[in-house]
Image (tube, rainbow, N blue to C red):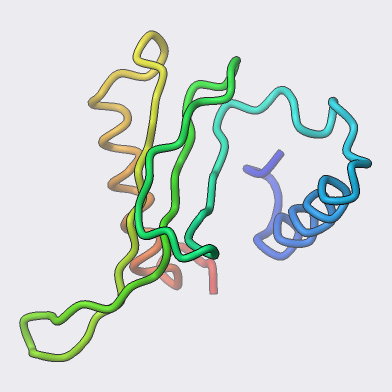
Length: 116
């Protein structure tokens, strides 16, 4: 139901589910039935990686750590690695590319999508 929830609601739900998962109290119905997952190893200093899809889901987004790199103005810019793994039987490469492009736009300009 993320498509009908606010960012604040999604954040609170994710924190609650993560706490229950760490305490081994998460029920199967609470983590099954999704179509895409997010795997964030950036919080552990991993710069980039490719996650394995959790069947029967169709995709997983791998997020690496936020890094600094020089830009054209000779100052530092932040960037991160985001890798999308897809089940090609369900998601073709064109659709995956368009999805990643929208993800990039959203991350680079969250205010234009009403996220701030």
